Image 1 (cartoon, rainbow, N blue to C red):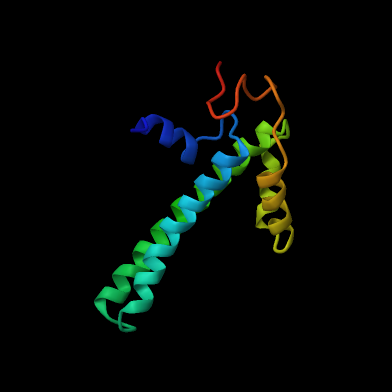
Image 2: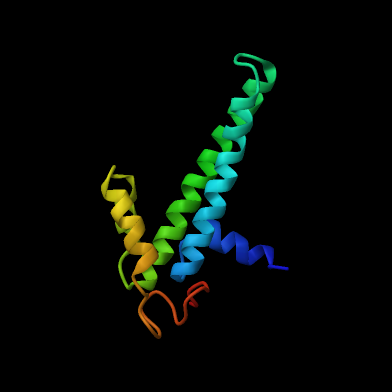
Length: 125
């Protein structure tokens, strides 16, 4: 079973590096978590109390997933030995699709770099 501190690091911290697989699978999990309340919202009558509840849950999931996507992208960029600020390109329509594909397909830098000694772990001080 994964250590909760590792999951906290993966989805909410920006230090260290992640591999292509960890980036893609982490992003997929975030998308599923975001999609579930949206799906539930579509199944209930519009304007009902249940509709309001699911829309609120979706809003919370969206905010949390937004940060998680940024944190994952920053760590993926670190693995490519690029600055994390470049993750802002994920907010540019159309360009974000290309950026996502680059982050999923291009291999990271082998060996240590300025952002960490190894992939898939936080940077050591």
